[in-house]
Length: 397
Image 1: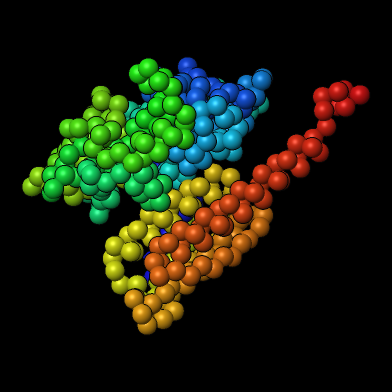
Image 2 (image 1 turned 180 degrees about the horizontal axis):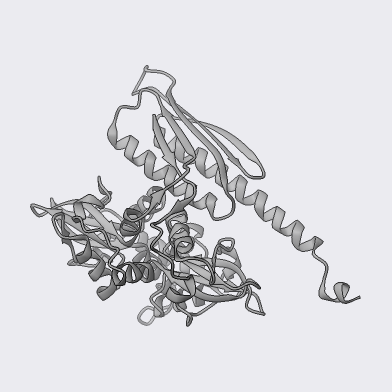
């Protein structure tokens, strides 16, 4: 049985600064009617990962990141409203603990900061938290091997870019070490994919190519053609503080970890934040696995569940969650698996069942269906609330 805890995440009591002390008060924003092309241009030029979407008067109404740009697969002329996530945020008067917990819980690169009127007043990125921890001498004192993510998901240099995109989205990761032979060739990130795919829409040489045709060309190309090479790497025995310094100095959020010149893991800004978080009053979220002995399946299932928990937590709180994976039959080529997913939120609950020869495919489809139902429910709830809210003219009358 795999058990997950996901509630009331806090840090040590010594962290007493306010979000307003660590946030970025100068930051770009988007409107719902802006184009995706503009969003990518702004997010790239400012070297950010997320952008707040605000209303005409500056209130937070959504968030856009590289992940949404890759997930939705819309053209650069599409509106930002078609790719943005519902708004998640912290208050400028909150303790820094709240920002760290939100980043950890939602597995996001950063969170918008709002004031009492829900006006966007800042951004807190993972790098800001790491800088804060470093200045307070609160970074872990151990080695990279103690916090890195392993086993690491990698991709062969000759695999198509499309495979890298699918691998990142399915595993809930934003960076992939690229391997050639048994050696590290480079690294590819969601930023690389989004920028290459969307920017290719615009003028290339003397010809202008339509978005979908160009997307197909890029997705069919070998990963090594758009990977960053050579990649900056760290050793498993390096101190965690070295990684923190690289993140702050180089601006990259993660690095492959080597041991004897082989990739043994990857360490990111999220791993550093995760290493300083402790959990109190945890709520068990259970994944019962029958006849699933392959450790690789278990690790992949762990990553998959964490990714979807983070997605759902961006719109509501999870009260209970159970996942059951069972083998239906041992006949044929490995038999088939049945996956049951049950999720209860503060307002509703859903149960989905899928069958597949690959248990991860069945789990992924189940979680995706549940997540879509939950998003649809809360989108409808927000629409109803907006319609019921009296206008300023009515309130004045």
